[in-house]
Image (tube, rainbow over all chains, first blue to last red; front, side, top):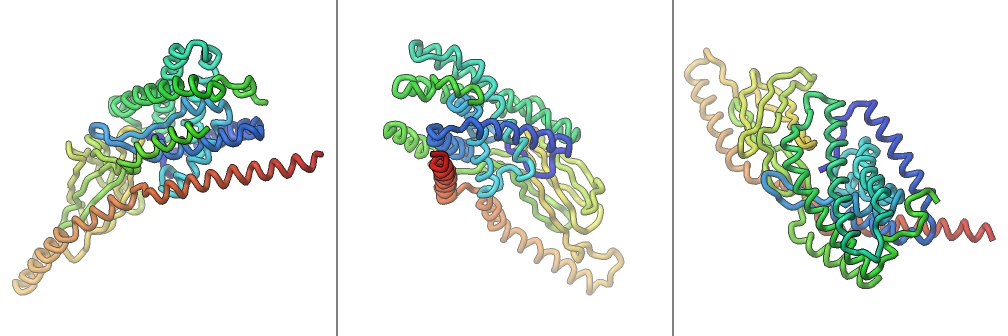
Length: 208
Length: 178
């Protein structure tokens, strides 16, 4: 979905995206304490698998992005996790370009990280149902913001290729619903089994 | 942690069934004086009403088309030569392809009868061969973008290795601090 190939975006967009991506990556790596490494690696693996595999849906096919879930579970560390996943996808499968890595990273990581930072304070193990619904809403919104970023960047770079709003909605709205369901389910499960994976140490949302 | 691993394995199995990449691709073939083809998503589906831009190798625009209901398109280039096709599906997916129409196919108008018979035969052979190898080309294009299970597992190995390396570097640095 959100893997923009080489040669589509204009130089200013590429430069801005690369700078922002590098900034997020630096923030994430600075906050990466030793005990966060396994969790970050696990979610990098989950993101890599989930966003590599597409399933047909109507006239198009979609794959999960999991920006909301990764943002909830990792905070800023979502940037290194998603970066590794994107780098491997670009190298192994030719998903997205290498020059657009920074832009793609911002598109997929930033909405989840920002929205999860807002939602996390209302998520606690004491009220799993409310937390799961909130996590689902975060995931759905993250997909929509990602779609808006992708569409905006392409429209700014190449007005001839401006994505059609109707087609964008047809592709991303079902995905938002699916992501919401998956994220809500995973949140519910984790709050019961391993609440510390979601109800994070205070350091998660900030730069520790 | 083992329950989590089991859940992850279940997720992986769930997705292993339709193991397809998600990428827009473009298939095109030159037959006679026509270039025809279609766009397709590797995971399934055809882009409808997508913009197809045809340019010369130097970037001059030749024509601008829209794909039909089955993602297909067809056009007759003004002259034989190389053309660059780029397809924008409208949801942020793009695909590109270079194709050349063989110059020998355009039979000269005022040719002696003998030559026109050979030209006609040539054209028919070209068409027959194109028809025969089309399924092969299509299968190749479809296989080209597939996500293979081996690649996925290899990617997981990379992730384990990278983060292991990171943890190892961290542990070395910590020991220096002691």
